[in-house]
Every structure is written in C-alpha cells, then in structure tokens.
Image (cartoon, rainbow, N blue to C red; front, top):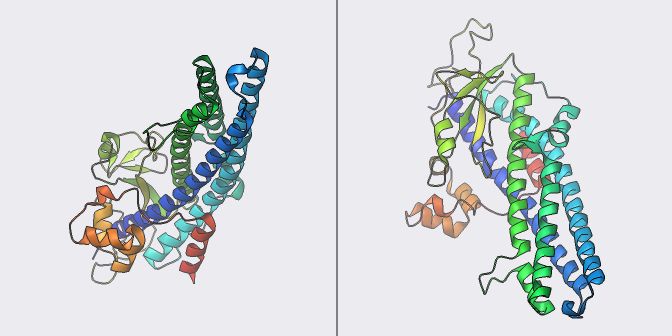
Length: 357
C-alpha cells in the first residue's frame, strides 16, 4: 500500500488537473477581452482610409487606441484579481480537507488570515514583479504593437481592412497578429499567477500548522515537456523556513512555479507520530498509509491516470482521447493541453464542498 506522501502526491496531481481547468476558464476571459478589443479598434479605425488622415488626426486615433487597450486590460485585471483572491482562500481550505482526509484524522485545523491570503495577490511578486506591474507592461506592449501596425499600414498605403487583418491575424494565411500575441502573453501570465497563488496559499497553510507539517517537497511532471530546471528539482525537499532537508542541495528560490508555464507542484511533509509527541508506532502498510515523513517518488500524469477509473480518465482527457490513450495509440504528451473543459471557481468550490459532505 502506498505511503502517505504518495497519497498526498496523487491528491496534488488531481488538484493540478482542476487548476489547469481553472486556468482554461481564465484564459477564456482573456480571449473575450482580446476579441472585444479588436472589435473596438476596428470601429475606431472606421471606413475612411487612414492614408487620408492628417498627422493630428492620426495621433488622436493612436491615443484613442491606447485608451481602449488600457480600458480592456483594466477590466481583465479587476476580474483576475478577484478570482485569484477567491482561489487563495479555496486553496487554503483544500489543504486542510485533502490532508486530513488522507490521514483520516483532523490534524490540520489552522487557516491563514484572510487578509494574508489576499495580500498574496495584491502585493506578492510573480516571477519577480507584482502582478499589476506585469499587466501594466502588457498594456504598454500591446498599445505599442497596435500603434506600430497602424503607422506601418498608413506608411505603405494599405487599406483599413488590411491593417485590421494584420492586427487581428489570419488563421488561413498563418499570420499571428497583435491580438494573438497579446493573448498568448496574457495567457502565460494567468497560468503563472494561478500556480503562484496556489503554491503560496498552501505554504501559508502549512506554516499555520507547523505543529503538524515539517516541510514540503516538489513533485514534477516528468515528460517530454519538462524543463531541465524542474527535472533537477524533482523530489527536492525543504523545511518550512525554505532550508534544504532530506539530502536536498538545491535552494528553494521561491518554489513553484519555477518558470513561465511551470506544471510542477508541492506537497507537505508531515511529522511522524514520534515527532508529534505520540508514543505510538506508525501505521503499517497493511492497515493504512504510513505517516512516516518520507518523500514521494515522482508521480507522472500517466502513472496517476493509470490508477484511476475509466470514468475519471474520460472526464480528464475526453472519452475518445482517453480510449486512444488506453489502447496505446497516443501518448499523454499529445494530450497535455486537453484535460477537459474549463472549470470556473464556483465549480471548483462546489467540488470542494461536495467532497466534505
């Protein structure tokens, strides 16, 4: 029977699948904002050829476009910050629920203060800078690209339709426009933000329960897309002060996510019964999972899914793709971006609440 750390690793992988679906929902919000931005810019450009614009009128158009970009990103920022604050509190509650459920005893009870969890989003650093600063940078980059395409179109005598097409891109012609570039950048930011908030909310919860938790371990998804960084950090462990333990030499360096698009996660290392002050032997594998503080072997998505029911595999991959995977006709590497429909935070909350009943 698996030890407790293996069970916690499996729970973390399952949670990661849910978070990936939440990321999908947030990415759809980004797409909606970008499509709306393109529509508004097209209206703003209008039907009159830009080549007939005087310099002052062209400058006014560019100023209006910058305002449109800033307005749409402001909407995105408001929605994203609200969702991330909600996610931080959900993640903290999930830590208690999943850990206590795995142990079978309500060992962990303390939650970090709401204000502290909120500060993760409002003032925390994401890949070295506040989230608001990253969004401000994307506003400036997107506005610059829009203006550049408009000026280029005017200088070369292009039609308004041609300028709009280059801004929006063309799937048929294989053109990646300004909107698609901005969408990809915003999508990467959303993915990293969700991962960052999730990890830090877990860490705060473990620290609030330091009488039970003695450290944390990185669990990396090992497949063809795993970076050298996360391969090197796979299985590494640290105490709650972020100092290496259990033979680990690598520094914590902020933890997961370690880079843009990181898919690794972290799990807690619980204290043994002796460390908890209980004069009792650990549970034997024949009765229940051992609470031994051991680090888990790396658990890939393939290993994780192989141990799940057919119904669960179908939910995650889709019925047709899951069947092909079970038959060995395709690999999970071909399915990593297709793990089910987007999951809203309300749906994630409902799933959590249901698991407590």
